[in-house]
Length: 182
Image (tube, rainbow, N blue to C red):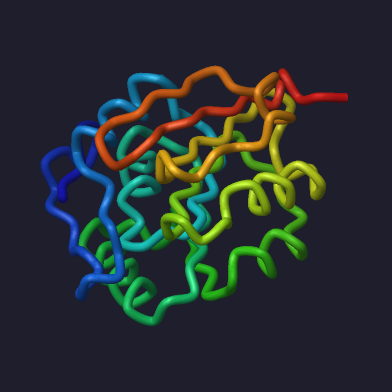
């Protein structure tokens, strides 16, 4: 797992040890970043962060700041090692919390929210709901979701969907706040 481009280009990231984490492949990362284009100057939220590879890629592409959220001790330790390796302590913060608890208490708004929840645990729609209900996206913000093809988004999110495509055992869906249902 490596950083694709930007100031940390070609840096190899530490992966979460064990078989519980499912790292985002470089190919999927390239797809995501080709869809969202620029991260420059944006505030990013990386939910179910794991190793933090999506957020670190955003920092490499000049994101303003990244908040990482995960509850796993292994994920937290891995993100800390990656922060140390990349020397980006002042550009990010790790929140060791359950995602739902973090979203319920968060008062910050984000330009871009990544979410890569454990597959087939019915977390996708409830997480989107909390993001929208708590108004955590900026006016032109996006949610990028990596999820199982078996886990379908609710129809009410269709109006927000700007990108949807299956890639093997993963699906990438991008939702835009500008298309938020009223």
